[in-house]
Image (cartoon, rainbow, N blue to C red; front, side, top):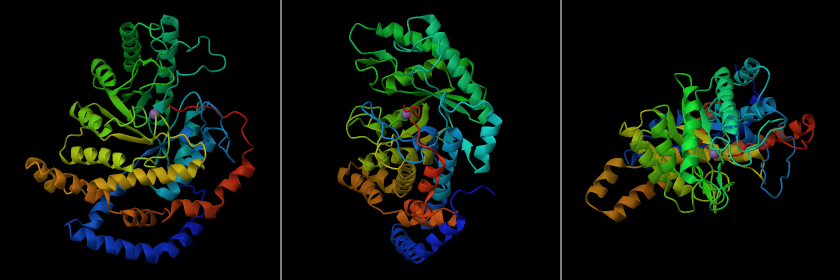
Length: 431
Ligand SMILES: [Mn+2]
């Protein structure tokens, strides 16, 4: 039995007060879906197997380049972060894994950390390296790049860090490392663009060579920032080129915020699925750039359309491995636990909605060029409120009908605020 940080009795009472409403709403939705020949219990069963990881850095308050406003009871170290992740999982029941980021989550005893997570029923997802900022005591600086630096000694240091992260991940039971580099140029002429990419490939090959047999290397692209003029791994095309050059264990990770506004991300998904190179996602939302806002807060339809591609690919047998799903957000003005729970449910919601797409009808409309009915077929699924499915699922698995309400009722934040003195300088770790 996993340890529980929120009183199970409180959750039971919370669910009891919601039980009648959820029951009636589920029955009503079931009747609606039955008229479309969709069996609600089958959808619920499919949604039950959906899971996504919470990033360890997500439970701390983020910040911008202007300021960071610390929240109350922020986690002081990775053990506290695991506890906050455990609260999220206890209430939403679709976030059973944590994605750690090094060096911030480095510890002296990885067996102890793994056992700590396991005591809450949590496992570790992809590990993340950091060569985008300098750490105290680090011999060589990444100011002018890491894996692509002109100095071979800096590149060697960056490679060694990634290899070390793989080793830490191996001890934690991870199966993949996500590599994002901020390397690039801020001004024209600063960097020889072709040679910088060749240096990247040379460094990446060394990381790739250190992967255990059953591991993957996820390459995360990002359009701009901190390099404002030219980023070495700027887009999915460069990422795909690198992944294809490195080998079968290398795949492309899509962070939704790492694209220009209005980029058709669902089409990128379709291309990567075609190439058998889709690693997975960092979910977030944005209005202007890499805003790191809560998933679905700005453009939920885009999130739905991404899952529409994923569900179609899965049902066609086009996915050779299941994509890795993770949230990657920065919470500046909300309680991180509340944002992460809401975002997890939002991603889960889009998956459920994508399952409702009438694919036979859609294929028929596509084949007859019935444009209006094709898009209406997608809209019908997107407009369906699947809340009762998500609520019932949570209630059946020990979670809360309304996770944020139950969390607030629990007083967890006030409790940890007393236990955890205010941090003066919590580390970063947002990519
Ligand atoms: Mn990311």
